[in-house]
Image (cartoon, rainbow, N blue to C red; front, side, top):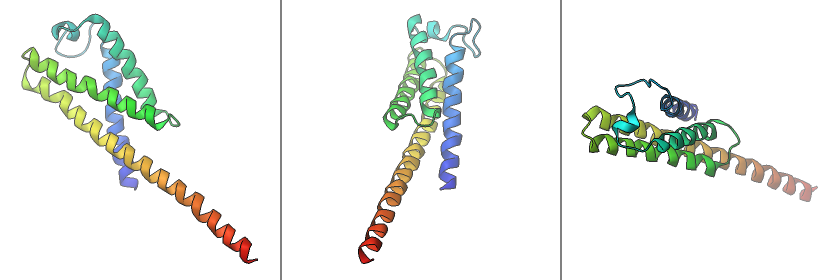
Length: 147
């Protein structure tokens, strides 16, 4: 169980770092990386840069803040997956090198591992809480009836 939690937090940290970094980097006047204006290079409209930056920032908050409903976190994971796959396709379409095509897919794999362990830990916590709710109530009921 501790290993599951460790894997979850490492992969989630990687995913959120990449999403947070890209949300900030998209909006810098001189972004890091090989392309001066990555959206122009890929032939994407400029408004998409703003939408993706906002969505990625909100997704990072949704994934990291405790107490956010599970469905919202699942939508955030899904929302992270779409741009990663799209980035790979876009880099392939403009003829960029193989590393530009594979790089987003590697992060997509990390995203899948994070989501897998998110579900695993959430399901374990849910089953533990159900056990804690059922066991004591049945024990107390049988004790009070026999007395």
